[in-house]
Image 1 (cartoon, rainbow, N blue to C red):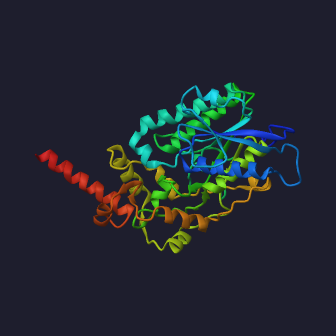
Image 2 (image 1 turned 120 degrees about the vertical axis):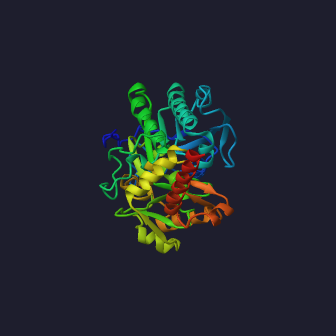
Length: 386
């Protein structure tokens, strides 16, 4: 599946003094960051506009939070509605635009749901959000997915442009969910021509409360590396994502845009900054073992997720920077934030362990993968001789 081309880089409005905006979903740190950024812009009474005062700028007026629980963000109007229920359309009435964060930052909740229930919920909410936005007469909807939809591949250019093809695996993992959301967006552009839908694809998110497969990679005692692989680590703080979404809404940016800290960190940079030692496996051994363990339910994430810690998927924010967006947090700062938020947590291949498990477990995610496979083989042999 390919991403939208560069043709949609204009503004969806010509001249409007103010736009009233909703953020759909209030429980996750990324949505709260978008709310804060919008409230900040509304309080200043100014627009996050393109340099030079180009046509298409707008000031943010009323900021509305739509969800099941009121967010701890001041300066917003709260409208109670379930984002997965068609009644959402009524909650969006009278507004000009909305933002919805589709990418998950709550891995614990998603694992508790299970892959099938998670996929069904995520697609139902995304479809309801799009349909309700069109039904309510909104002109612009911003959907936050992830740069992971480009896929992590050894032949990826560094950085990827925002119009690069989406090549992630459409499997049962969370990235597969987002690939389906991207497909919904592509179809909706034809079905709802009066609604402009912009996809915002951030690099790996960090911030208080962010819990993902990527953040849990750093909860392991050692950094797993795959032999011959050259990752390019790039992050995006949720506050920078918030300011980017606010700018997209204010300027009516169309199509798809990528956001992240400038540049990237190498594996050597990562080891230097974290003080963590690496352990190396061949790609075949790591992927094969992870696939077997995932299929029997030992590991929560599919083997395809290992690609995101092995191969590059760093993106260029050139489009957004050209429109005046300036990320406050660089990659080193983001890494420091990530390490602070996971302090005291221990995980192996995205499976979180308690302190006792971590102390008794293997010294690295790689050893844990191979060690767990060996234990399972011994158990199967015992079972066959019983």
